[in-house]
Each structure stands twice: as C-alpha cells, then as structure tokens.
Length: 170
Ligand SMILES: [Zn+2]
View 1 (cartoon, protein in one colour):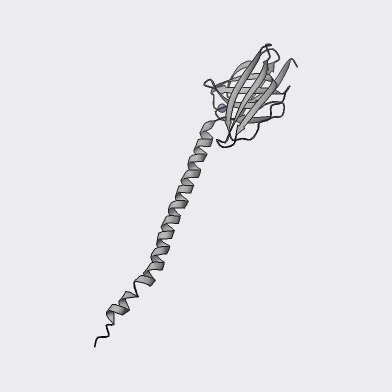
View 2 (cartoon, rainbow, N blue to C red; view 1 turned 90 degrees about the vertical axis):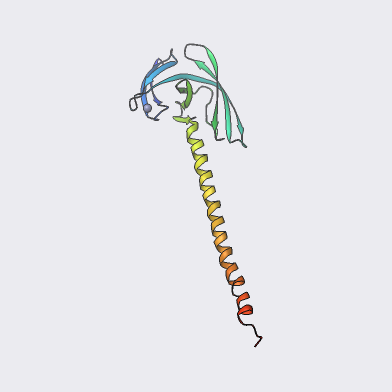
C-alpha cells in the first residue's frame, strides 16, 4: 500500500475522521471534524503484543512492539481498565490516538475495532455502583428498623398493659 484511507477516532468525542495515510509516515495530527479538537495519531504495524491481566484490580497491561512506517521499531505500553483482551495481531495495522500527549484510543484498523482508555468512564461507573450499593444498604437498614419496630410494638406494648391496668386487687 502506498496510500490508504483510514477512519481515525477522536479521543474526545469518538467521532470517526477520515484520513489518507501514506505508507512512509506514521505520525499524524488531526483536527476532529465534529468537536474541532486536535489529536495526534500514530499509525503503525503491529509486530508483537504481550498483555497481562490483573483480575483483582480488574486491569490489563499491554506492551506492544510496533513497526513505524518510517522504518523504526518502538514499544508502546498502556493499561486498560477491565480484563477483556484487545486483539492486536502481528501484521495488523493499528492507530494509537493521543490527546494532550496521553494515549486514549487504540484502533485496530485491520479488524475495525477500537479500545478506549479513558479512565473517567470507569471511575464514574465505580462511583455510581458504590452509591447504589450504599442506597440499598441504607434502605435495607431503614426497612429493617421499621420491621423490628412493627414486630416489637405488638409484643411489648400490649403485654404489660393488661397486667398493670387490670390489677385484680379488688
Ligand atoms: Zn472530536
């Protein structure tokens, strides 16, 4: 291939931006057609990928050896939240999209899939989930209290009353 059109995903709004890439250049600067933000993209060929999951932390670490179109080799390392494995096979063409010099989107252009590293999403999800859990626990406590109040009232309250109010000392 000498030139090829690819769709690069904006790290900010995840819109696809069509770009013609050349076989001898790997680094591109794109202005998103939708949100007008600039992002950097590095289009490379995958040489090898290693990934290691950490089930307890729910993370996966990748180290990917890539071949730059200018001829050099490089190692790109990143970490994703979640342990699902993102496919990057030897020979695949991939784009690494950066915003503010932070890697945010990895695209496998060969199979048309992408991985978003935006950590904001997952921490928000964790917060929402823990908030919901807290609410459930709180409502269970309240319900439990009401329940125990209801069950303790008829047992405790009426019993002493007949004993006291009907003193058979006449
Ligand atoms: Zn955008």
